[in-house]
Length: 381
Ligand code: NAD
Image (cartoon, rainbow, N blue to C red; front, top):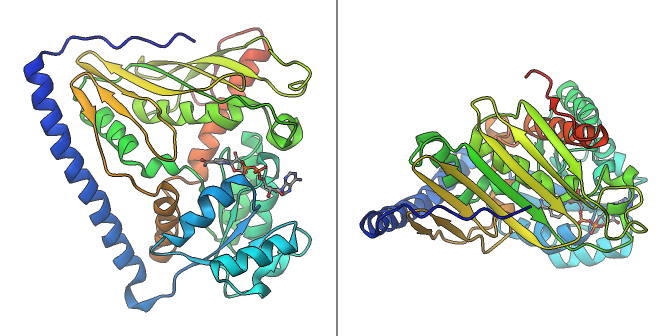
């Protein structure tokens, strides 16, 4: 997909003013985000309520690199234990993070968390195709659930997860860390306040050169290829910029550079999303290259995030100058937000509904690609 060139129609004066305003805005947002988190923490922990205990399920790369370390920086959560296929790994984690060894479960014994008062939340960072089974298990054990993105393999699986959580009266959330990132929050604000006019010309790509013979290339465990894994971030950003769910999609799978490896899932795909107010987003994802950006344009200006979906180092320019916010621990804010939702009885802002909405888009993108690029209307459009 061709990367659009930003239009250059701002004067130097307005650019300087905007940079100053954005910098002030950044400082305000930085302290505002911190302030609102502090208020949330106070609210969540008032009355000396104990911090909700999180059990991490699936100690793979993401858990190891981000969620475990992220838990140590949370203010509302407690690292309660792990569910892992390797007891030795669990013991190493218990020593590193200080939870008791009795709180190590295997995939065969995980149902035993039911009734364990140490555990409030199960966080499944397992392959996509197992999220539904793991969420239902956790709900049936009476525990609140976070599942990683994508929420499941299909929208139908999301329905089953939502129903199981509702029946068990537990909360459900998806690991959408970018919802708590200040740059993406600023994108929300620009969409809402229309500083640049309605953001109606959207584009984005999330691709990484992935070449491993692992669960990501097995359809049953992954649900699909690069779209499920990383393309979903473009869907999330576009829905935020358009403040809506798409009404229709058109998609085309791109030729495989490694058909032997990607014989069950797509390697690369491009798709267009149409939104109710006329906004469109040209999007793509691939396992054959590295690219990571999102761009939103309105009649009066544009914003470009590049990289857009990173854990750290998101870089943002606008038609009126760059943005610079303090680095924040996305995963810690995400987990703290969920824990405070539990303590205060609110629904997660990144709940099952949002996860399902994105899966509905993904289902439609695959449908369109399978039907030769036919325009597929989304349910409810
Ligand atoms: P990974 O392969 O590194 O880890 C997967 C874990 O699941 C491993 O510990 C593995 O042992 C376990 N597992 C349990 N049952 C399994 C089975 N039947 N087959 C294979 N593994 C099994 O993967 P990852 O990169 O950590 O991704 C895990 C989940 O987290 C995925 O859903 C992925 O999309 C998501 N993820 C999210 C982000 C984010 O930024 N939010 C980043 C990376 C990954």
